[in-house]
Length: 190
Image (cartoon, rainbow, N blue to C red; front, side, top):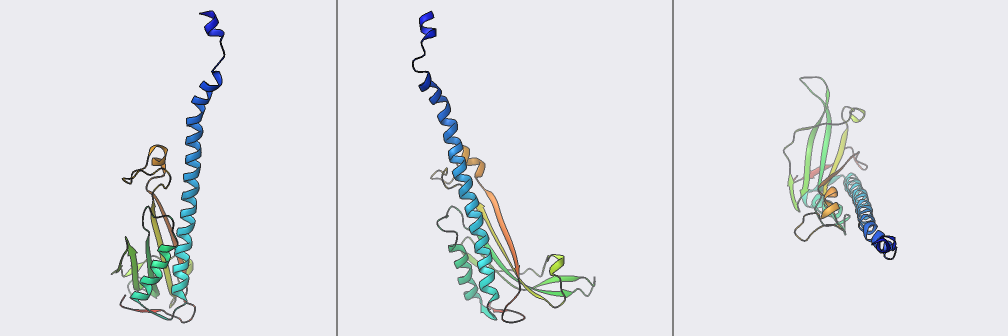
C-alpha cells in the first residue's frame, strides 16, 4: 500500500483533467464576451447610420425610411440570433401652452421590430435639456437588441452552461441628430 501511495505516475494527467474544464469555460466566456461587445458596437453603428441617412434628406416616404431601417438591420450581420428594434422619431421642440416648458412633440415616427414596420401614435417624447431649443427639429434614433449567445447557443434557442450568463442581455443606443439639408424633414405615410 505504501508503494502505491508513493507512485507519482499519472499525476500530470490527473491535474490536466481537473484544469482543462476550467480553462475551456474561461476560453468560451472570453469568446462570447468579445462577440457581445462586437455586436453592441455594430448596434451603435446601425443606429448612427440610420440617423445619418435620414438627416441627409429633406423629405422622405415611409417606404424610403423602411429601406433605411433595413440597411441598419443588415449592419448587424453575421449576428442573427435576434433581430433589432430600430425607431426613427422626428421631434419638434415647442413651448407647451399649459406649462410654458419646452417639450418634444412628435412630428412623425417609424419603427422596425421583428421585420415589421409601423408608425406610432406617440405625441410627446423626452429630449435632453441641452437639446431643447425653441423651434428646433431633431431626429432621434433608438436601436435596441436582446443579445443571444452566439457560441454557446443550443438549437432550440436556449443558452448552454456558462452561455446562460450572456442570454438576453438588453443592448440599446440612442442618437439625436439635426437635419442637414433643411430645417425640417417631412415624411409622407409615416
